[in-house]
Amino acid sequence: MNNTTKAQVVLRLQGITKRFGPVTANEGVSFDLHRGEVIALLGENGAGKTTLMNILFGQYTADEGSVELFGQTLPPGAPRAALDAGVGMVHQHFTLADNLTVWENIVLGVDPLTAPRLKPAQAKARIRALSDQFHLKVDPNAKVGRLTVGERQRVEILKALYRDAKILILDEPTAVLTPQEAEALFATLREAIATGLSVIFISHKLHEVMAISHRVVVLRHGKLAAERATNQTNREDLAALMVGTEVSAPSIETAAPGAPLLSLRRVTTPDQGAAPGLKSLNLELAAGQIIGLAGVSGNGQAALSDLLSGLITPASGEMQLNGTEVQRWTPRTAIAKGIARIPEDRHKTGTIADFDLTENAILETYASRFSRRGWMNWAKARAFTKDLINTYDVRCPGPDIRIRLLSGGNMQKLILGRVLEEAPQIILANQPVRGLDIGAVNYVHGALAKARDRGAAVLLISEDLDEIMQLSDVIHVISEGRLSPGFGRGTMRPEDLGAWMAGHGFDAGAPNAA
Image 1 (cartoon, rainbow, N blue to C red):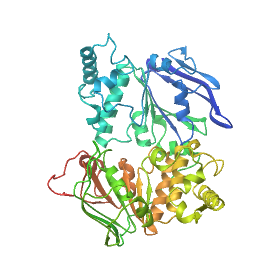
Image 2 (cartoon, rainbow, N blue to C red):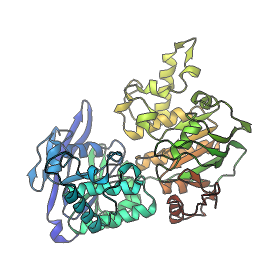
Image 3 (cartoon, rainbow, N blue to C red):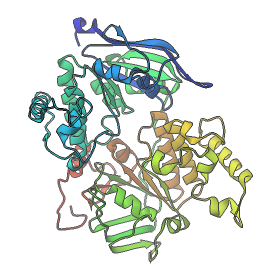
Image 4 (cartoon, one colour):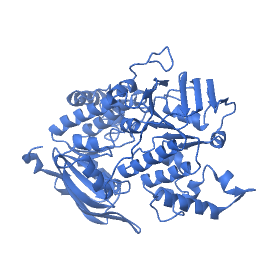
């Protein structure tokens, strides 16, 4: 970015304040974005990043302040106005219709698919031209439901470029990508930025922030805490600015495994729609060990998670707990046998949005711990929840608040406390820190390490290789339902694991083949 382009302000947020009842989500936030510039927007969970972006898009109306796009004040509460002015967003969770083709998804929202003036051939030609220009290779006629995760992200970016986006907001864009796909994304962004595209990059991966951004804006408790030129700061400085104090990751040493607690022997499960089941999978979870499972989303992780949670049973193969073959397997059995889960989706399967914290804290144990002869002991349940809130630093007004009002990080802390307070034998940690800030990440990682050290077996399922490599004693990669051999801590580089994640190295004829 040169001095000429820096002078061209494309977005100006001025004095943005937004309150939700007694809670102030944003307070007096102001910053500019320039043409051809990448700003990284950082902050803890609940710092106000999402609220600020919702105000920019007109989903929320600011109580005070204004938004200017290309020198024109954006009318408040008008979502279409931001899109028409050239703002595009790629969400962390893709907003694509699996049953439509690539070109139909891209055009949808620009023109109705049945509009008389819509000319599919012209639309496809333009998509191909954009694909070639920005190296976003994808077939316009392909069904989105059959695309890889990396290809779907290309479609999301093409959708914004097709609409002539001049400002692109990326929310955790590499959360489900292999290292190679992340590098390809950054190469594409650099080319687009060179043509004048401006980017707001929201991420908790500070090494990516350092690699792609020109400037960093940090929010803390809804206020603008700091602005830094990226070349004048470092990861440690940014982490401290986000949380208000020095941050250090927990030191996790490799542990010697104890006795096997759970074993899978040549286990196969049915495919679930387009998602593959397990393919003759062998896996052993030992006491006092963290097993990391790396893989691109949609490669059998859901099947393994459902199997261990008791939601499905093997079509073939053998499953053993403490050396005894499992015969009848249900979610109630799994909980009774000491298997606890941190689910992948805290909103959909981890909590019930309109239940309060107490009700969510006892969801899986109310029958065994908090009821007697069919009567609930709510005083005991609330006391338990208050202890969770204090022990796990869940920042909230109290146990009676609806859980949907909490930030993602605080919601995750409650789930973590709910799991760990039962001192389970086996912990299924499925994407336990997805979307969490660095302070919450360190907290969750430290808690999982303590559980391992007291003798629990932890299965860590994550698409974040940094997390896998930091925590795991042994790493497996899953691809199309197949499991790689186990790799000891420190024996594999990210690019090596990325190759396995892409399917290289597997012998389709042998389970867990090297």
